[in-house]
Length: 255
Image 1 (tube, rainbow, N blue to C red):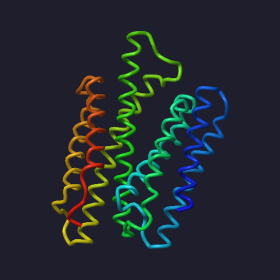
Image 2 (tube, rainbow, N blue to C red):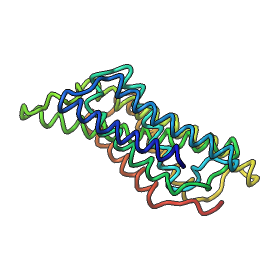
Image 3 (cartoon, rainbow, N blue to C red):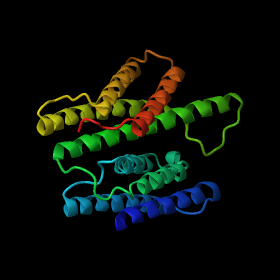
């Protein structure tokens, strides 16, 4: 629990540091990366300590899953910050604040979870899929917003270049589909081992299948470029809303 609280605190510090760097020009990128990386490392230490203490990872309830998704997103952001540098740095204050909020949600998750390797892989792949769904939805929203601002010639210098947003949007959709596929595969293998059959009529699994079909269509349209970019962005935002509704409203009932 100590490392989970430390992780949330460091994400909050990172958010403040990014804010000062973006709007006041105070601070340096290595410090921002160190704060964000230390927060992520603290969360990983928390996961490992929990596993060795109780034999399972604290990710079996909504709070633990939200924290896992948020920290997966932080890992993706750290990679992007290292590669793209200034072009994503200006949004660091917002992204790390999301990391702070989701990690804070993990505080009630102290004992719940499962230790089965297949279930762990299922949860990690699910966290990855939702992280990229969130990243894609946010990117699409920013892309649409900036395009509207460009029409009126009112764009702040802190915004990302449109080409970066477009690439991030399309990559996020493809990775969302890949991770959703892995989620279904690992979930099927786990239920076979745990319950003796590959499929159970569980609302959460049915929703995941629906979400997989939606992103399968999205990934296909993305590859063949069979849809206008603006409509593709709206579909990506719709996917984000759909997935968030599933996280908040749908629960496992068959296990």
